[in-house]
Picture 1: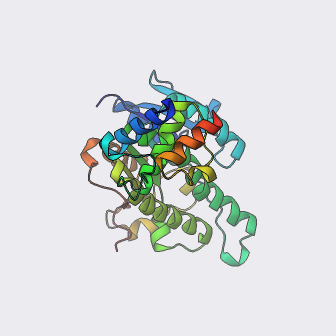
Picture 2: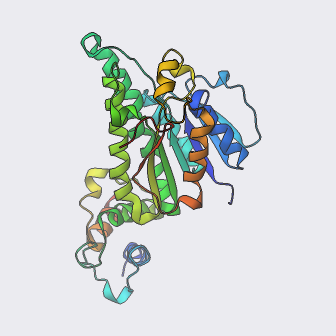
Picture 3: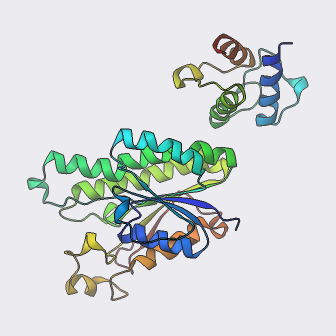
Length: 77
Length: 233
């Protein structure tokens, strides 16, 4: 497991109050983990803070799964 | 109350100044903005001043850094103007200036504070509207449209942010004795007000005190009218 993946999973579990065991790379925040639309905005804010990045709004919209978050962060950090 | 921090736009005079003074008296920290803060004649250990033109995109963008450092719990969108004229004589510039100052600025300013409030899972946004936005007023097509917009903005944002314990409300003053209403207040108007007097800034400030406090936890998305009974739905 990559370090980024570990951190993303941790942030998602905290934000959405879900268990690590229930999260896979393909988990969708909204469909699988019960996030509402504001949760997804807050998740992006939390990723930005944790990784010291600024995720543009139009790209943030495509970050909908654990994998897409990890990919974006790895590509841009 | 653990000394919460409030930003008040247009805090240098009129209703805004009344709100600033009253929040300071209640023990809040206040950051008061105005286009020219050198004209602010109040000093207080808990009061900070900042120059801000809510219509100037660059000025508002620069203000983000100050907001981030200040980390406010409360935003009072109070800055507003009138450019009254009969509709047939109203220019598009008069329309644009009032919509921009009274309505677009609420969008811009609120953008600056919401992320911080989401992190705290606590916030109070109070927009100073007007009964003109609900009842209409001749000569104020621009002003009343801007204030009705503010009320609607408050309702939608209240629904978006309710789950994060951030409340958004509008206060709609009636005739309040300030520079803005100086030319408008006369005996005929007072006769139409059930409480038989025009309001003062303290009448508005006392509702602000309530809405920013924990006492108002269960109130959001409302337009609260403070007008001595002039406009009743």
